[in-house]
Image (tube, rainbow, N blue to C red; front, side):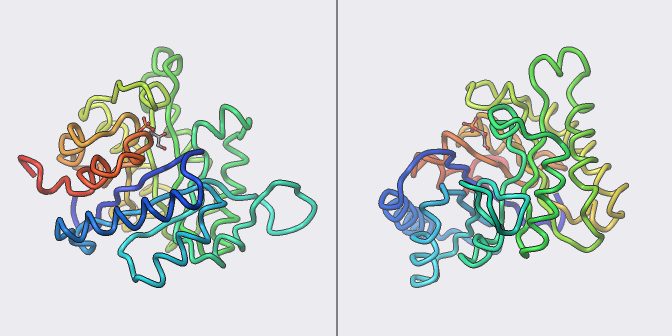
Length: 261
Ligand code: 13P
C-alpha cells in the first residue's frame, strides 16, 4: 500500500439515533485523541443514519473533530416528487465527504441494480460527494463464478459515469462475509482487490488505479484488521457490526499499533 491514506470507515446501518450518535462520536474522538491517533496516517469516517447527520455535523464542526462522515445512500435524483428519498445536495449541505453507494443490503432489499448504482455514482459527483462504491459476490456467485468475476463486473458498470480525475473509493464486501463472523481470508480479499484495482486502472487510467483506495468489508474486527492491512491492495476497511462498539472500532482505526504493521 503506497501513498494511499488508509480509510477505516464505520457503516452504522440502521443503528444509533441522533442522541446516541452524539455520544458515540464524542467518545470516539476522545478515545482516538487519548491514543494519539494520527489522522494524517489513517482517516476515520462514520456513516450514520440520515437523521443523525445534522447532529454529527454540528459536533464535528464545533469541536473540529478529526472524523469524516457520510450518508449510507443517496437518491439518483436531485430534487422533486420522490417521497422518502434524500438528495445528494442535502448531504453536501451537511458537509458530508462521502456517500456509500450500492451496499449489498440496498441491492438485496431495495433491488438496486448495477445500473441504479451507476446513476447514484453520477449523482454523488454532481454534489461533490466521494462515492464509496460497494461490490461483492454472494455465496452462490462464489461457487459458480469464483470470487472476482461478479465484483469486477459490478465495478465496471459503477465506474461508467466516472470521469478521469474524480475521486472514488471502492469497497469489496463479499456478501457471505457480512455479519456472518466469517471474514474472507486476507489472501482472497487481496486477490479480488487487486482485480478491482486493475479495473480502476483500465477505466480511469494508471494514476487513478494507483491512487484509488480499495477497502475490504465483511466481519472485520480488531483481531483481524492487521492481517488485511498487510495486503498490498487493501487500503482500509468498511466495518459494520464492530463499528458500533466504541473500543473495538477505535482499536481497528489504531491497527498500525497492532503487531506486525
Ligand atoms: P459486518 O462488519 O457487520 O460484517 O458488516 C460489513 C458491512 O456490511 C459494512 O458495510
